Amino acid sequence: MSLLQSKTDTMLKNNFKLAWYNPLKDQRFIFLNLLGLFSGLACTLLIYLWMQMELGAGKVPENDGQLYQAINHIPNREAALETSGSAVSHAGELNNN
Image (cartoon, rainbow, N blue to C red; front, side, top):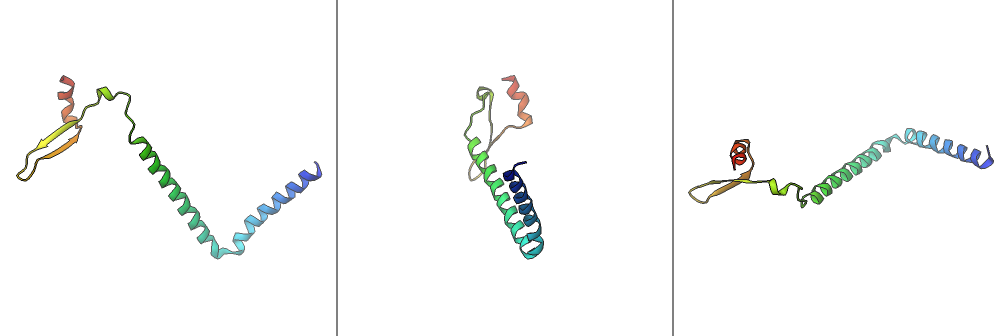
């Protein structure tokens, strides 16, 4: 081993010792540091999931010519209510057409 490699190994060992013993010495800050770490990771995950949802919202599927939407028109005294979706009960009727 060269002298530089030996100094590097010693330096890494000392850094790991410090990283292990300092939290034991300052126990009151462990909870605060872990709380900050976990909240940062949770926020990062939520931002990532939100971005994935926003980026995927405008994409058109490859089989868009075969997609249908069933609209149910329900008359009411005040105004008509329209609901949309695809239910299993409409599957047979859509297959016949």
